[in-house]
Length: 273
Image 1: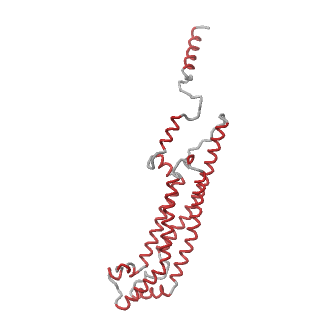
Image 2: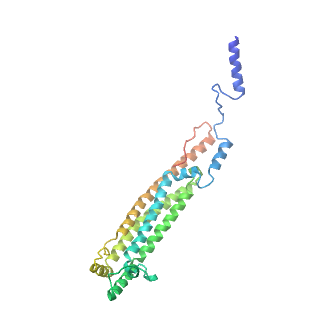
C-alpha cells in the first residue's frame, strides 16, 4: 500500500468517526422527526392569528366557509331591507315615525289613515318572512363561522368525527336553504295575491307611486339569489369535508404502517386541504 492510498483510507476513517459522509452533509440514520421538530410544530399551533392559522383558513374548506358566512350576511341584509322597503308609511308606526310623519306624504285625511292601516296589515302578513329569514340566515351564519374557526387546524390534528360532523352540518344547511327558498318565495307570492296588497297597490298608484306594487320585490329576489348560491357553497363544503376525511384516513393509515414497518415509505401529505 503506497502513501496516497494510506492517506485516503485515513480520511475515510475520520469521516466515519465524526458521522459525516463523503459529501460533507450530515445524514441521520433515523428519518423520523426528532424532538426539536415536534416541539416546533407544537409551538406553531399557538394563537388564532399566527401565519400558519391563516394558511389553514385559506385552504379549500376555509375559503368556501368564508364565502358562506359572507353570503349569509347578504341574505340577512336583503331580508331586512325588504321589510323596510315594503313597509310603506308604517315602517316605524310603533315608534310614531315612518314615512307618513318624517317625510312628505301625498296622502291626506282619511286616505292617509287607510294607507297606514293597509301598510300595517301588510307588514303583519310579512312578519313570518322577516322573523324566519333573520333567524335562519343569522343562525347559520354564526354556526358556519364557528365551524370555520374550529376546523382551521392541521387535518392531522382534527378528529375524524369532526370532519363527518362538518359534512353533516353542510348537508343539512344546503337542504335547509333549498327548502327555505321555496317556502319564502311561496309565502311572499301568496301575500302579494291578497286583497290587502292589491288595495294598497291601487291607493299608491293613484298618487303615482307605482313602485309599491304586488310583484315580487327586488330585495326578495336578491335574498333568494344569495340563498341559491349558499345551497351550492354548502354542497361544495360537503364534498371538501369528505375529501379531507379520506385524505386524513390515508395519512393516518400510512403512519400506522410506518410504525409497524419502518422500511415502508410514508404517505406524504401537507395537511392543508
